[in-house]
Image (cartoon, rainbow over the protein chains, first blue to last red):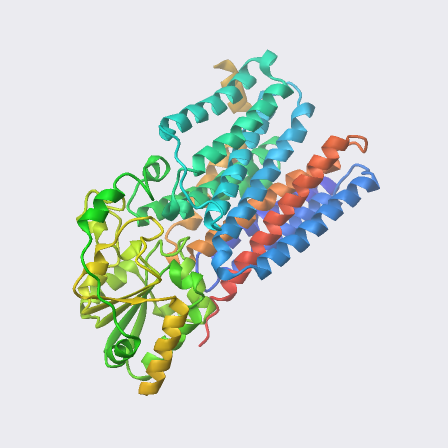
Length: 463
Length: 102
């Protein structure tokens, strides 16, 4: 009786995961979808604790309760307190926690294994995938929050990483096939190698590709959870894990497509400080001209159509509220204002949408790349705030550029291009941008927030 | 070869389950607008936190004198909770901002 009740709990959880994920695919129903999945998760967790047939000592209940309590408070507070700009690294961190959880389960279960190949595979796979996801996510986290901002490349890192992966998988396979080698010493060697591989896997991948990596590691953790589900024949873990595994992989591929690069290129290719940046430097060069804020205000005030291109720089400067204010001011003067959203603007796909939504920008004003590109030729002013690589024409014209082939926002079609940047430093991907030297382009140097605040004040004076 | 076919025969329901779940995952994500990619990734991140169910299950079967197991299990439940709670709350916070004001 009690057991079938628990199965029903898991059924409910599985259905809410699918339903929740489906609803999350549409901005209108997304929040509801998230809450439904969370409710299902609650049912699964409390079902597991309370619908348990065996007598369990109070000590264990106490420990579970304590862990849940600490985890809930810490998770809740961090998630509520952290700034919107820090969102991507937080997702990466939480993902790493999930991976570690899966790996720890494998560590506990290993000594209890009987001679069952299926379970052994599930335990070892859970250990490897969970651990790689954990150490990889931590490196991704450190890269995103800036404590590790250089892509570190060992010589021949591609070959080295492939060998490392082969060693990890090989040891796992050998432990499954040869019973004599199936012991705890080898298990801990496997653990160590998996940690190392996770680090080696992520550390050479530079800047702009981090979102793709996080998405990939996210699907890894899903697979690790599914291994646990296989081990315990637990349907909620299986559905949740596999769902995230396959959905995450697809999401990763969609993101790569947005950058027009195959996944293999992201993982193995050179990017961000790669060899070809030198060529970009010499190809660009030339003089840049800058523009006074008062002149820009006049220019925008008398335009018919202004397109704003937001990038990560806008997020860092916390300028999303000011940009919304400018949008409203311009609109009150009869100027048509839109936002052009590149699929990979910011540090995660959709990052800009989240940020602009925070400052109450109507999401009908956020126009995706394919739709906005034909509109640039009829645009008077394009205002680029803290974006760089997504408007770099080298992606179209310079085959030696590391981002060659990536679809970009074709801002150079507009009559005037204004670029707000802190300095002439190259973007996150470390590539020079010929757009800055274009005769249509004027630079507005300075911190996005202070520059845009002055711009908003100038616009008010004109009114 | 024989073990493999035996394995497949033994777990055929599970294999069906896995294959169909993969299709569901792909189907559910297909054609989502980029607007929603970050929250979606974050939401998926919270869902794989279901691994915590495994951690709790492990804990429930431990003996009270298995200190190493208890410590590891405690840690696993703690990290799993962080994944679940943090994941859902962050996603909710992102989506909160998508509210349409009209």
